[in-house]
Image (tube, rainbow, N blue to C red):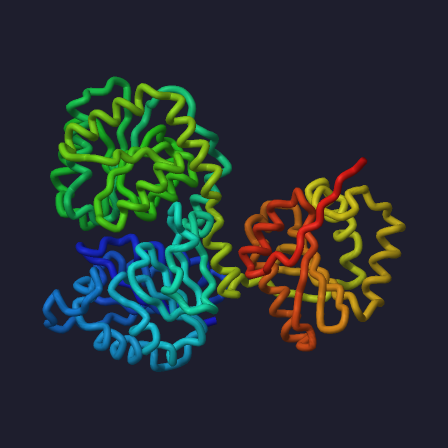
Length: 501
């Protein structure tokens, strides 16, 4: 699979757009995808990241175009017109047709995307602000908004699949792995983490350090994280050294620092979902206009603590730090709600949507019988099965042999590398098929339900083109399966109710 990314990073844009694209690209490359980034004026240290990950970069040139060109609010981010950028990007991708073009740029809209249609089979847009039209097949907005299911109404094509909310947050693998180590925070604050993004052009980091110094909190460890290109790097490093704080520059230990912290002070954006994934209570401040609604809605949902009015920033940060310090119950509530909302598996869900999960489907054979017997009788599988009883071995053997011999039943095993991911069965009837699906009950398959489902659907389309409709039966209490099918564009056809008397 060949996938291209169009995104930029600089002192105006910040590094968030690039980093979340890199997170997705890294996971895709691990599954065999060929990756090419197309970017303009990318800083050297970000170029080095792509080189280290063996990803291609085509650097676009910058023309002397007035910053006011274009009517979009963020048109000046591009440095050229959309038409010029489209032509340059088409040239950068002219050697072959990509399977996907992923676009993450507030200065590009449907006009640019339509012009790029010939370069890729499908286009995915990553957006946060819902302020323009898009011509795309998939749109991802990983932020929480109270009205997130209506924000893109009339702004995307009818066929566009929407991936909305923090369950799709583009978090690096270490956040998902370390999530199992955390529980909702309890007890006093002993360690604070300060991070205002990879660029922080207005130096909110320095203001936060000043506030913490003036508060003179006792027995508190402070970790400060900044990017390599921070405009006030030397001053921040000096302030940290003078006050016994630890300054981390361009660290690769962000997940570890979040796990060890009891409270974070920072901005909105992608880092919000990293902190939520690891249950870190956060005092969040808006550092960009596009963060205002995100932070307000997330705060109303109890995912973070965000002051709604900040006139005197220095006084506000001190006042609200004290408020959180003195309220163990509030910090516990923020931590618990955050963990419940963000599970760190967003990248896996997106990869499933892009059909680049690396999962291969094969027909089950006689050698699979023993393993299927073991999995089917696992408590997690039985609780969501129509028959929740433990299956007898001889009954299982008869059933398994009958399924393999029945041309109307298709039993598939999903595998990735050396791991078995799950089991899918299709029961055909005319041009329809009923699907039954479960993941192997171990850690290797966790979060891969949508990827397994998508891979099985593709197998069915290729091998049984006569099937035009798939339907699923989900038990009333099986909320996980209900979410899986709804996220995969299945529609609720009817609802059955049962009352025992």
